[in-house]
Amino acid sequence: MEIDEARWLKLEPRSGETLRGALERNLRDAIRDGALRDGVRLPSSRALAQALGVSRGVVSDAYGQLEAQGFLNTRARAAPVVAMVTRSDPDHREPEQTTRAPRYDLTPTTPDVTLFPLARWLASAQHAARRASTATLDYREPRGERALRDALADHLGRTRGVIAEPEQIVVVQGTAQGVYVILRILQARGASRVAVEDPSHTTQHERIRALGLELVPQPVDDDGLVVDDLDANAVLVTPAHQFPTGSVLSGERRRDLLAWSRATRGLIVEDDYDAEFRYDREPVRALQGVAPDHVVQLGTVSKTLAPALRLGWLVTPPALAEEAERTKRLLDDFSPALDQLTLAELLTRGHYDRHVRRARTVYRGRRDRMLAALEKHLPELTVEGVAAGVHLLLRLPRGVDDRAIADAARVAGIGVPALSAFRIRPSDESGLVIGYGRLHESAVAPAMRALAKLIRARLALVDVQE
Ligand SMILES: Cc1ncc(COP(=O)(O)O)c(C=O)c1O
Image (cartoon, rainbow, N blue to C red; front, top):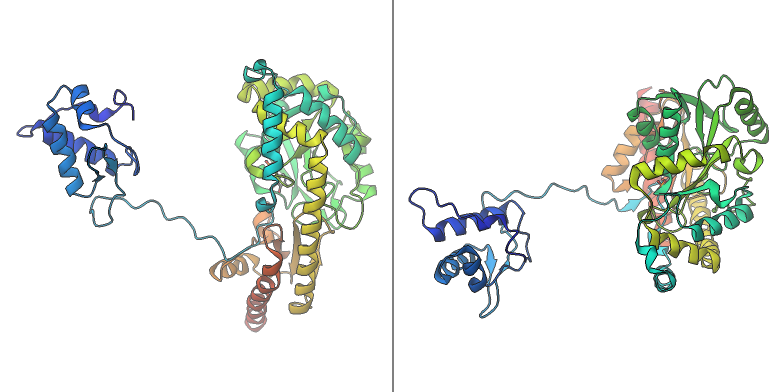
């Protein structure tokens, strides 16, 4: 470790305290408060003595004391290493309790990250880095790497019917940042009202409110977003697969929404988060491809590859491209260039498509199993949502407290959110939003059995109480 930077270098003995005592106290405090973490190697007694301007004996004595107290591990002729602080130390603070991972993780928003094509990613990263010029390591274009934007323009045109020149694409850190960029642009243009589907992804609600914009909840039914009475400057919508109900925006509603945008100049922000995973047919074309001047399309690799990559993009109407670039630059200059080049490599060499096909087969299998298990154990309840993505909606009878069921499930080791957790306005609609992305094939049947048992018991309880 760098001695110069260590704050315990300052030896200020308290009255009656020796230099050794002061050093021992400094080190103990640093270990206790976590500044010196277990496993950190301290300087040798000779080096530290020299840095402190004290005799070597002072340091070796302090180290010896700390070893005796269990704060350091020492070996002959080796510098001491900070030990794991023992629980018997009365001053030692336990790290914050982390919540235990559920036995069955039915999170609806996450893919199976164990499917991540690590070997391909690493090989592509190596290839991309080798080919890159040294300038690639410098400050880069805010819009993102040209190679990635070219690859995305091709890919999105082919798979989603998106119509975009690479200049309209801005690479961002996931949908999260894409939404933020758009909201900042809207705000700068004087927008005040942003509509979202009710129910929808709650983090988006927070983002909108955090920027001081008014969150306008817009109902959702079997045909997706209800467009009637839409009164906002922009609307954030999931047309290909509504989150969390799983409906698809019907043809009529798509037309209504585009007509609304043309009439009011309201911006449509299309969250195209999981369109790659449609299991029974081709997904509907991205709205952007029908009205490129009215729609911002947001895409992400969080579902197809891994959320941790924080790689996404927005395809803006040509008139917004410069503002989007400027906003991205003000936020964080640009997204990590080597990761962008790696994704470009995966896309252009076909590895991305192959991976998506493989993941699609896995998720489809899990969904089929889940449907079969729900049909077997909960035949009275209906499952909603098209065959897509990594989640479905299990409807519960109206008025049932779905949060109480989700709470009981958590206690039973099943992590699954209630439909009402995604709501803005209260509703008597009830359900569980069940993800199958993370649930290994072998766990689907036991997980559904356990969930069904709990639901059956709860519903019976509700029946009795009513
Ligand atoms: C509706 C919706 N949009 C987008 C995303 C992806 O967000 P990001 O790209 O920021 O990881 C998710 C993931 O949970 C989602 O549920």
